[in-house]
Image (cartoon, rainbow, N blue to C red; front, side, top):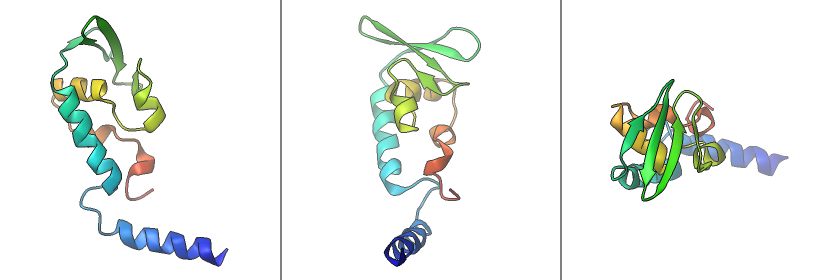
Length: 106
């Protein structure tokens, strides 16, 4: 139990050095998804749902429910490259769409 407590204290101290509100591992992953997503065209449908076309495949991204048909956003809690394409197209900051458990207060 003391080992776990010391690990938690160490992690908390390290998290005070984070540059953003998200951790450094996620901070590295988000720009990768942005770079991949910049090349995909996003088409608005209705009620916060967008279509992202990749070759012959159409993926649906729901901004309101934070879902994508690739399931990457739901599985990781950070916007996948398809969601990044949509977020960029509507002019929002992608870190606003990262799930709360990756952020500093959590």
